Image (cartoon, rainbow, N blue to C red; front, side):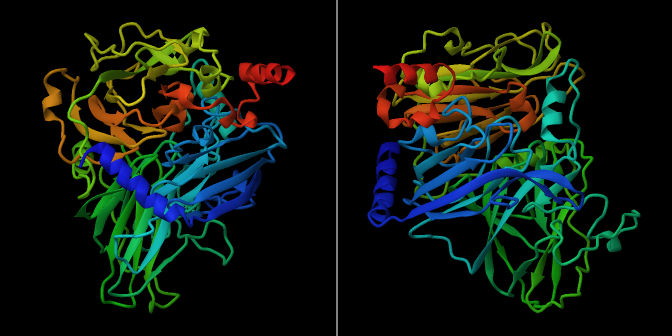
Length: 572
């Protein structure tokens, strides 16, 4: 099945539901609240007084309308609908400076879009480091004809938490010299974690303090209650700001069936790695013992951990309320066992019925990922350009003829060349720019992400890269420097998985392919919050001229130079 035919079939299936599609309309207010996410009081960004925010539950083809009011006193806000492709509504993508202006304090902006395909998704703030402050929630899009069979489901939204405020973190990362924010104090499951105590201390000799909870404690874990001999779907999303994670359920296997809103060829594992921005569905089959309790553990991978596991409990329905798990939580695999991580990534193949990628690409974009300096400030750069998002939304700048501005110039499309990725950069200096690449509509683009050494020492980090507005085929991974003409022969062109987020491993490369079939301006960036804040991202623009001028709400463009354009239009 060709890509075009498969896409048409998908559109027709959604259209059948859309004939009777409902409208999911919600009114949200964003404000700061005092909260106890990890049994220590802090400040969170809450929606309608909830942390995490309310779960959106829709069916593919539904129209989702969110009236978002900013009740923050001194800062703007936007929300990105992570995994929703925004076909026909690119201004609703929720990326500040790219698709819209930040919503000012006291103002309301209406997001309206169609959820065009089923899957496990989430939403989060996309202005400054507001995701780190807790502005996030789950978004479930159901299939009108679900092919998976299960008896119940649970949502697990994973995040990390700092006691230092996000405003302090932003200042620290922007200082000269940079003050690194360190590892998170806690990991959270559905917004709940425990700092300086452990639910499993009674099973350990490490001298940890046993957690105790009162009935309404905001940090008390949510228990997953199950019946024996049943199948449960765990919908898992990672909105972490920094941590790569591993999740396991003691005594149970996990069958992976969905990744980033796309079905995959099922495979069974003891645990899963999940990077920031990724989502999964796994099927868990319960045993025949009705009185057992089991720990679910979430631990740090990819970075030397200084954060204890997050724990919650899988409880069989007849287990006494006072009972506790009799076995310790699963041990998180060693943080730097990258071969294990790569082995997990290489288990993913598209489910039957998904189209293979086009055999060849029309353009190739090589993105070298480096750490650099600008006037003593530590930055991340792509092809020696550190991303600096303009105050004028890109979608308006390009659509309304402001693209002669210097900040809209494209960086180089290839910079790997003779660069030694195993050593710190010989010349650490870099520049900042908009980092925007423009592509014609309907072409096939290959993006090769190339990792490299940081400024000092011999270190290369994991970077999960997320593309807005698209799914892409993950063609392959490799160690060392990508070799054009050689490594392409290793591509999986038969059944690669479709994803919207992919890991770039230390000192390695990742290759992906996508089709420019969605007019708009789309962020492509590392999903680690501090890294994006420090410049690790680019912007892809495609078919912007096809968007009718009046289709973009004025409220999305009322800042920067597009504000002046709107004012002049009003005078005329």
